[in-house]
Length: 250
Image (cartoon, rainbow, N blue to C red; front, side, top):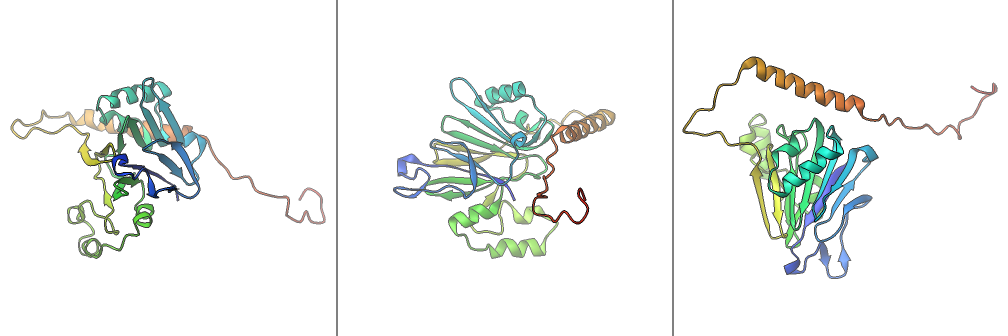
């Protein structure tokens, strides 16, 4: 298992990412991507090529974890655009990844359109803790099971509307696909859609079917190319403890 864990703490309330004065909490076995008032960690066996960090002059950081086909220059341009509030392009690069942007005391975590790489959050220590898995947040706040969510999951497994943004853990919420979690100064938390809104008064212009199919095909091909171009990480077996047997070399 591997995930991202971070939090945006409210320093006005003295939280600062600490359970109590003098005791700072951080995930076990984690690699810190950045520190400061809103730290971020990568937990698990993330490989070097799956963790990419970009920093802009004058402030601003972007972390992309996963398989992403964007070049370093594209990531830098994406960070500059995200500083102005544009988020959709952060999810348009080929591959499968999670993007986290920190600009000053504003932290933004994006989900994908399909919800394949989810983002969860919960109030904690006067601020907000977030992660790409619900279980570490449930452990952090010692959450109880959400019986209502489990009942809805059993009764309507094919109706996501019945589940809403809930999770099996009370107090842990999920960010909807196509949305981003935005935290400011550790005090405010909101989810915003990065997809353009469809006007309700004027119908959207028709889309050519062939062009739409070609676009989907091109996106899939680009994503597969990114996955195939990624370095292979084969485990190296430890043969030192094996009995060589009666024939050398076998």
